[in-house]
Image (cartoon, rainbow, N blue to C red):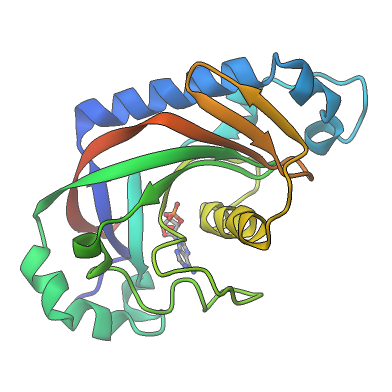
Length: 213
Ligand code: ACK
C-alpha cells in the first residue's frame, strides 16, 4: 500500500478564495489597530519598525485541514490510520467544515476548525497528546487550516500555535485586550498571540482525501 504525505479535508475551490480573502482582510485590519501596534515588537523585535502582515506570512499549497500526517508511511500510526474503516468509508466524501476562529502569532496565521462528532471519526486519537508539552485538550482541538507561515516556519507549527492558545483559554487566562471588529471579537494572549472569534463561522465544503505531493 502506498501511503500519502497526509490525509485531510481539502477546501473546495470557491470557498478557498473566500477564506483567503477573509484572512487577508483580517491581516490588513489587524496591523493598523492601535492595540496591535502597541505589541509590534512581538513581530519586529524593534519598537518603531512597522510590519505588513500580508507580506509577513507566505501561503503555500491547497487550503486544507490535516487529519493524519503520514509522511509516506514513516509517521507513527500511519498504516493503522489508513486502514481505519471510517477513513476508507469516507474517502472522497464532501463534508461541511466550520471555521470558527482566526488566529495570528509571530510564526503562523490559521483558522480553527470546530469538528462535528462525525468528523471526529476521522481524527487521530493522539493528535493532541503527541505534542510537547502534551495537552489535556479535547479531541479535535488541533484541527485547523494553515493560512500562512512566517519565513522559515513549517506549517506543522500552526496546529501547535493553536493548541498553545487553547491551553491558555482552558487555564482561564484573561486576555490582555479585547476589541470588537466587524468579523468578530479580537483578543490578545501575549507574546504576539491574537485570536479572532468569528461572529459568523465560515461554513466550508471540503473533500476528505489525501495529498501525495
Ligand atoms: O498546515 P498543516 O496542517 O501542517 O499541513 C501540513 C501538512 O502536514 C504537510 O506538511 C502537516 N504536518 C507536517 N508535519 C506534521 C506533523 N508532524 N504532525 C501533524 N501534522 C503535520 C502540515
